[in-house]
Amino acid sequence: MSTIEDRLRAATRAAAQTVAPGSTPPPPALPARQRLVPAARPRRGPGWPGWMAPLVAAVAVTAAIATSVVVSGALSLGHARSPSQAAGRTGTVALHPAPAAPPGIPAYDVALAPGPIAGQSTRAVVRATATGAVLATVRPPRPYATFTWATGAADDRTFVLAAQPAGQPTASGRVVMKFFALRLDPAAGTAKLTGLPTPTVSGTWIQGQGLALSPDGRKLAVAVSRAARSVIEVFDLAGGSSREWKATLPGGTVIGTTLLGVNALSWAADGRTLAFDAYGPAGVEVRALDTAAPATSLSTSRLIMTFRHWRTTGSLSGSALITPDGAKIIAMEVPSPRTATQIRVRQFSAIDGKSLGVLATLHYRRGAITGWPDVLWSNPSGSQLIISTTKPGAAPSKNGGLTPREIGMVTGGHFAPLPGIPGGQEPVW
Image (cartoon, rainbow, N blue to C red; front, side, top):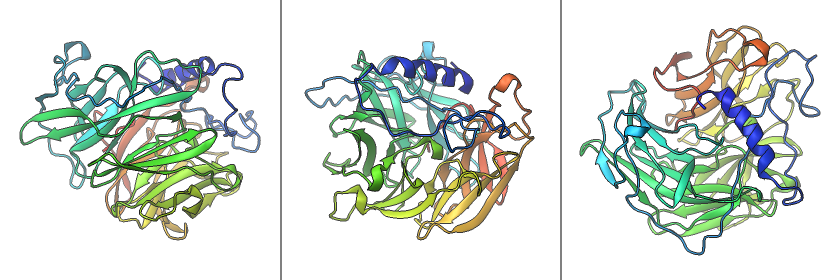
């Protein structure tokens, strides 16, 4: 499956097969996503705009793993070749050099290529940000079969991939993940995948991406749900120790919501402030967790902002991502959902949630905006961004289909596409 539409359809079919009747408690009701349409079109959920369509159904798996498995060097890295031509399973192989990226933008990105089931990829690709050229292809080392999440550090050389074992049952709605570091060494021309000294993590899959590597690459934050409670674990990657925040948030609020795009978690550069989005009775919240504080309850996290009035004040519909300097929250806004001719990249104060203005406005024909806009990367101050959005200038699709997506830079109030990076994938930097 190479298009978002195919992935959406596959996700819908997969979701219907993943949960056995009565096997798990029902998840909190989240409004489903739909194509942006006039108000007369039926809505998927009560009280929400009718343009929301499901982005990805959470396809989860379980397995009993008695011990932590650390796998080093069991991968397949290919160099600008097709998957069938990938190199043999080895830990370190040659890495093609990346052409220079635009000033201030990382040279490399890693994306999970679409797999046979939505949310599960059989390979991760390393690309050149400037051209989209594939520099390496990474496959899960045995006994793991698929990658589910990816995240990157600020050095543009260190990435972490979450992998799942092969042959897991899918009826329980749970996942088991093992984490691997992918380290790029352009000077030596090598790339290496190694197992991290962290235990496997299990729980119910959250909506959105529940994985975030701190900018210095020393801490890994993971979000899952267990027994209907949201859990955040933060691992020290040097020694494998961890801390856990697992109490429920006020009012049954849960971490992760596709209403705010792919980034459920994001770090500030201080290595202790972790921003996360959650869904609860009051609406979609953005919170900040002090991971250095002694408390271990998510209820102690600081509420930055709540997006309440979806119908009347516009729909904040993209990733709520904290800038590395910790000063701002960046989100994508679709004002006037009934007409849907603009997407705005807006910034808010990370202290009190007040709007700090619009960084860029993308204009569309009525009905052309489909899918979900996302903030994928920010420089320290938020003055340069990489976003994923509906392709500007695209005509509305026929028969309710999705219009093409495009990944590009936002700088100085302007959007510029990044050539060669597939719009149907969400890379990490």
